[in-house]
Every structure is written in structure tokens, then in C-alpha cells.
Length: 155
Image (cartoon, rainbow, N blue to C red):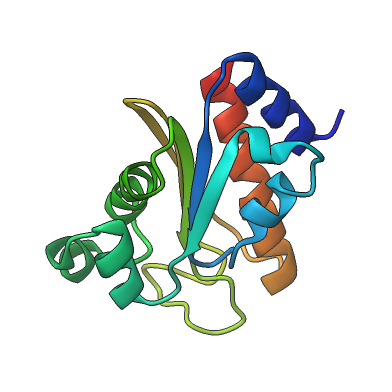
């Protein structure tokens, strides 16, 4: 069974709903989740918050968090995942924010750095993905990691 199907089955069996808040993955998590027939039973929607303005206005990420830690940070994805659950009225959510590349990296946050959060009600777990495998692979890895984290939360 594919990861997205397994996550869907877990959500259905527990009667839970899912939303996404994505930056660097550009809606890729939502696309994979909705590729599963019947996903409308548990997937409410997703917000692609590529700009900080959208992170602030739709996901309620604080400007202080963005100024202090940056968009690519554990603090930001925690606020994004909480904002997605609130805005889209779901039990679970995943959030991604990172530097997919090939440009945009710094010595502190090199290309390939992606912060991911997965939430199941009040439980939030985070993961810092590191290593540059090229833009496409960095994004695909983040999508898979987000779903793996959610699966772990749901089991």
C-alpha cells in the first residue's frame, strides 16, 4: 500500500480530518493525498503559503516569529500547522517550509533545509530535513517525510 493510501486509511478508521499548509512543497502533499480515491472523506483542504504575507494572513504565523526565526524554522512550521487546523477546521495537519533550491540558501540555512511539522490534535512533531539532492528531489523528500510523520502520529 502506498504511503498516501495508508495515511488515508488511518484517517478514515479514526474518523479524522486533514489539512495542509505548504510553502516549499507548493501543494505537493495535498496533491498526493487527493490522488487517493475517496480522499474527500478526510481531506478538507490546503493552503499554499509561499509568501510570508500569506503565512501571516491565512495561517496566523506571527510577524515576530518570522522576523526572529525566519520562514524556514521549527517555530514557523509549528504556527503554520496550528493555523491550518484552525482555518480549515481539521483534527490533523502537516506543514512544510524550506529552501528547495537551487538558490536561496545561506550558511545557516543551506539549500535542502526544510522544516516539517505534523499535528494530530494537540500533538505536534517536527523534523528538520537536511541535504541538497536537487530541487525536485528536495521537494519530493519533504512530501514523503511529511506523510511519514503524520502516519507515525496516527498509529
